Length: 614
Image (cartoon, rainbow, N blue to C red; front, side, top):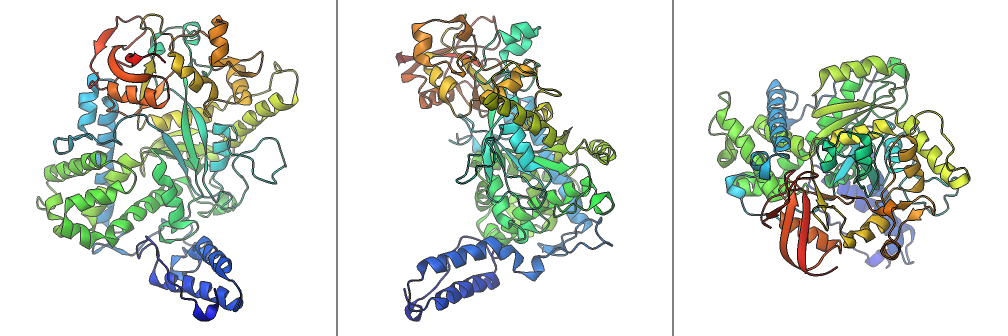
């Protein structure tokens, strides 16, 4: 390619709020300049690299994207004077409608959670599954790759929390030989994390979610199997995907910092944990400034919530003329772009419309059929309701060991629920990460595997925070068995219980056991490996014969047939479905169950029979 004959154009899927025409011109200008510097020579790679450099830094190129914090307004809320469908974003109308939307979300979440334990979830599903969307959505049931996303400003401790929760799950990078324990990059400055870190963490099952929870003693609970182990309270540990994304700064929705790349990374998450610097010693950009210049953590909560709201709001406003013209079906499609099924979205839309119809302060014609009459408050009410259900949020009150944190933590806990956050757990991610690190290094470097580690022996604060997040959007746990009386596991699940990448490492197993918990059922501590399937068949060993070993994480609304499909996908069953038996608790008399029946805590122990042996 030579510059004299080169033509450049730029195609992208971003809207004008995300990527302005001015930025588009600047990008093309940088590409053309790169080509000009290599006139007469092949320049395709130089042009690609120039475009790459631009997109990695374009958030700093627009002066209007800068958010100024000086000493006089440092602790004031960050205001935005832009209009939302004709109403200033900082008006009392918007604030009132934001609160109304959050209340609708809280109602939906509360109703959904209350239905998890009820028979067939009739009450709980009513909040999200209404008469107009009774058709089954393929993404609204089945095996759930449950994902928790970590959000917060730079240097709040997200990557440290990630390392403590996942036991340094990041893969070693080429040339990284500094230590044998690898994990998410950490440093006391902004944007240590550029690309998302993803790994498996271990979340204690919610109270009542497992059949063994009705057992009275720890000894009885420890006699029940568990593929991934148990904590010191006997709680079964569930493998969940954890995603740590780049730190958020004020103005990210306009492109500042990592901008919309950060926000788009969140769409994989089912719930969020806001990792908050509870010490109050950093500014909004994550720079350490001490207690005199730091922001009160409650203000961090406020502007992080604002960024999420503006992210969705700007996307909606950019297409609002099209939405008004095409109606509520187009509106539902817009919300479905945040990786949720149409059934999920319609449940929220109809709950918002119902609330609007019963609120005497809202005009009756401001419904989904009259969006041409909507104002900024109506739109923000809907967006708040959607965000509250789509991304319910728990709080990790990090750096609780610092002297300045005590009063701030008291202030925050007294204000909850606030800014879309429901629950909070005080912890020191750094201390808990060091506990995990010491166990992993002990496993790698010492011969004495029974050596005690001083201090706390497990990341209990991190585990409890993960559990509090999962409580906001609860999965259904299903326990597949081969026998309804002995509760022996399915032979076809042994491969999953010995080879799956979600299984805890030896160092993390030390954490479980040294703190009073239990190792995974098929972990062979004598050999330091997971007990292979063929060995357990040739030489029966009571150490590896524990009932109710395996668990499937299913979406609410899943049926017996969905469980069968999940087992078939895992290779645990073969052939066609014949029939199934179920029970809800240990010792309960089994009964036949129809494949259309929805799963809840009354039928969570399942024996599914097919026409082929595994």
